[in-house]
Amino acid sequence: MKMDLGISEPIDFSSGDHQQLVRKTADHKTKSKSGHRTSPSSEPKISRGHPHSKTSSQGDSYVVEISEETTQDDNNAAAGPFSDSSVRRAFIVKVFLILSAQLVVTVAITSVFVFWKALRVWVRNHAWFTYAILPAFFVVLIILACCGKIRRQVPGNYILLGVFTVLQGLLLGAVTVFYNAEEVLWATAATALLTLSLTLFALQTKWDFTLLNGVLFVLLFVLLIFGIFLIFIRSYWAQLLYAGLGTVVFSLYMVMDVQLMVGGQHHHSDLDPEEYVFAALNIYLDIINLLLFILELIGLLR
Image 1 (cartoon, rainbow, N blue to C red):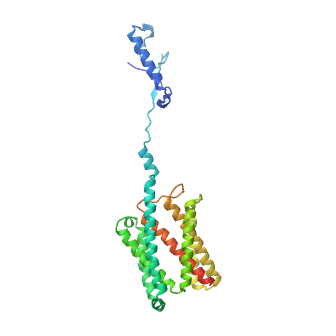
Image 2 (image 1 turned 60 degrees about the vertical axis):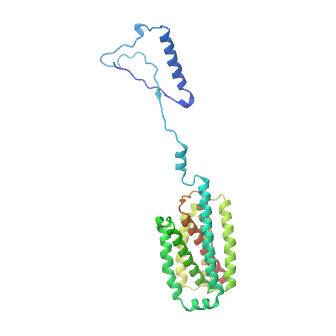
Image 3 (image 1 turned 180 degrees about the horizontal axis):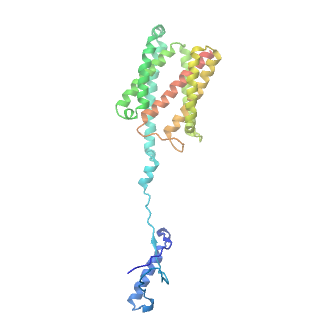
């Protein structure tokens, strides 16, 4: 026996079209039970030869479309690891705790250089101290910045971050010996106020500073080249411009890094919940660079 199959519009179960199919089936069963018989002429004829040559009428036919339902788990997976607000909140708290510990250690180390006069004189007379710290500082920084697997492993990531913070504190202390204690205190207070203001601004503003990632990288490269030229060119106004430009660049970096950390509706917020060390490191470096450029500004203006 050969059958002619007709294709009609699909049935949408959500709209109730399937009830028509149920009613037709129920009517057919009722007629069969009541003794209704179809006439021989109405019975389908078996066609020989070409099956489609004598098709006078087509019966009702239905096509059922079954689509995969999107479950809540699939939606959560597509939304990312920060789809749960509690995960994001725990991440932010952890980053701020790590950052606070870093700043406390840095302030403690730098204070020794600021207020211990004998140490200040010794560092000024022995330049090798600063040059000896620089290689170790950059090695630890490269490991933390480039080796994602290492900075996610506990307790190795905390140990590396602690070593980096101590080295940064020693370098910062070696820089402050060339400034008066009053200048360092004013620069610290200005940096703290600016950091707090920029953080609140990043949390409240509707502007998406994460889109400036590429622009800020170009400005940072320009700032680096500018600083190399200043080694050979001694100009008061050029140094003042350099310090001002550095303050603006790292202020923008501060806002961008805070928005990356808090996430939300920003274009780029692809940090992983395990990247709390990396997030704390970025904001910490922004604060330290802000302090250095503000300190240079105050030194030049005084």
